[in-house]
Structures are given as C-alpha cells and as structure tokens.
Length: 111
Image 1 (spheres, rainbow, N blue to C red):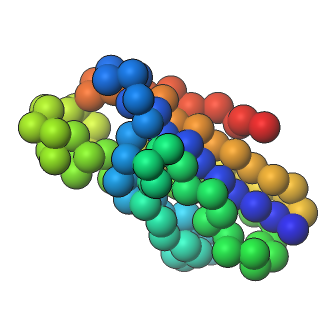
Image 2: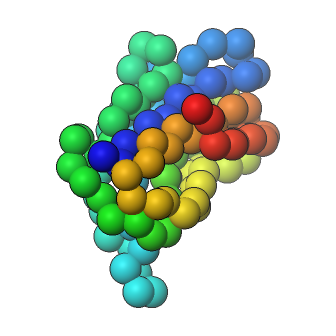
C-alpha cells in the first residue's frame, strides 16, 4: 500500500511544528486534485495522509500552510506556503520531512 507521511520540525525554535495544516494533492493533467488533508500532531507529524487507500503512482505535492503556524506565534515569516512536489511509485512508503524556519526550509525523502 502507498503511504505518505510527513514530519514538520521548527528548526528556529528547536521543536516539532504543531498545528500546521497539510494538504496532499495529485497532479491530474494540468490541474491538481486534493487527495487528503491533515494537521500536524503534538510531535509535528501527519502519520498517514492516504488513510489506508491505495493511491496510484504519479506526481504528488504536499502543501504546508506555514504562514498560519508562524502568525499564531506572532513571528513574521517569508513563505506563506511551502509546496513540495515529488514522484510516487505505487505500493511504496514516502516520508517527506519538512525542516522549517521563518525565512527558509529544507526537505528530503525520509525512511
């Protein structure tokens, strides 16, 4: 089964980013189709955005609403949204961490 998970860490504060809204979308031609949404838990994780459903391979993206996260902390931030686009092969697990600060971010494929 294809699983897509994420973990958001606020590197500027040194702790998980709690309460970040995350949207998973799949590319459908020139448009994007919403697959799932979630919010990071107290550990900064969204464990399974695919809800146990089998998703086909293709191009997906995670959209992180980071401006709301920083605004709630009264911290000015440069990026209102972080989008991470990646390729999925059916049946694999994809863990996509986001290391976040008010003026930058980094991501990679985790295990």
